[in-house]
Length: 311
Image (cartoon, rainbow, N blue to C red; front, side, top):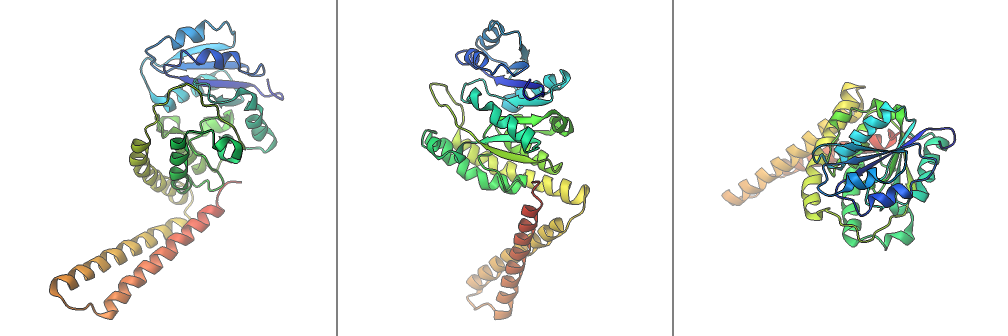
């Protein structure tokens, strides 16, 4: 136990036989249970975990590869079934320093957070140790994730070193959360819909010989459409269905105005080019007015959304 709180660790592992043993060996003594989720590995990950000799370890087999999110959710369900109070996620590749786990737990207990996550960018000395492609990916995705999730106070959204109160975890619709690399981002979206408090914790990362299948071009192509859909889903759920807010109205009218202004402006430009005649000033002003008003309404909605960030 940690400060009278039962702490269970979920360790999603896919082909991590070379690292999962060390993750178990270095797990702090205050962790009560360790659920190693063998996510359809084709190597000896499950056998290595089972042979660790640590009585706290339980190997959970998914039977097929569910993705990091799917494996984590399977571990979450086991931790909840075993009456955990705080559930920690620590990947099986050894990149998450176990000696910094108390920082996450203290954030949950002392700051009364529902969800605490690591932020490697708060420790400047460690940024230069991160692979360059990971830094680029984080910077590109951070703003979009802030917009989609509504947590404007957090950074490094892809950081998977997290801790969550079991009470908050029980509120989440686990079946609706994305099971793949989008998992951490989608967790933030669903946490925000429930107005749960999320905090960043300064965290370092360890990069050694472990292999990563993170494909930056694929992430850049796939994540923005997913984030746009999740943004629309969050606004609908939080600001329309659960409690109607001017934010939804401002966004709807603003986006319609922007779309009309841009579309009408493009039509005027093409028409003028085809007939080779100048566009009337009034028509141009109508297009510009719709664009300006639409942009202002969208900006106001974002400002209000920032103010709604659970703190």
